[in-house]
Length: 243
Ligand SMILES: [Zn+2]
Image 1 (tube, helix red, strand yellow):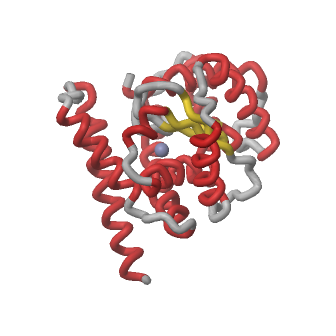
Image 2 (cartoon, rainbow, N blue to C red):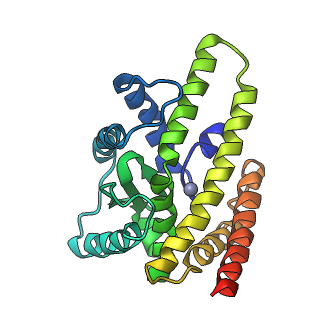
C-alpha cells in the first residue's frame, strides 16, 4: 500500500490508484523500451493518449465550458513559462468529490471538482497545476516509467525488490520537492502568488486533521505534507530575498 501511495503524482490518492494500475497495463502492452531510455516526446505523447482514453472511459469529466476555459487559461499561462513548452499541455476536470490532482504522460493534467471547490483562490489552483506542470515539464513521467519497468523486472526475476523500492521512494521524494519548487517558480513567473501551493496544502492538511482522517497508516503522509509545506515556505522566503 505504501508503494502504491508513493507511486502517485498527487495530493490525495483514490482516483489515481486505478489510473496507475491501468497505466502499467497500457504501458506494458504498447511499449518496448531500452532499460536506459527515457520516453521521447513522441512516445510520451502517444502513451498519454492511451491514458487519456482510459481516464475518459473510467470517469465522468466536467464539461462546463466556462470552468474548463478558465482552468486551461491558468494551465497555458503556467506552461508558457515552464521548461518544456513543446508539450501539448491540457487540463481536464474529473467529476469527483475527492480533493485530487495528477499528471499523466504527454502533458495531460487532471484535477477533481472537489479540488476546485476546496480551492479558495486562483493562486491556489495555479499552485496545484504548476506542481503538475512541473512533473511533466521535468520529465518525471519518463523517469518514473523507467523505474516502473525496473520494479516489474525485479518482480519477474523473483528477486527481493525491497532495495529497488527504497531507491524508488527516494526518487519520488526528490521528484516531489523538485516539482514543488519548479511549480512555485512557474506560478510566480506567470503572475500568480507563489504562496498558492503551500496555502492550499496547509488548508487541506488542516481539513484532514479536523476530520481525523489520519489513522496509523496515514501518519507518514501527514509528516511528508508537513515537511513539504515547511520546505515551500522556506523556498518562497529565499525567492523574496533574491528580489
Ligand atoms: Zn507531485
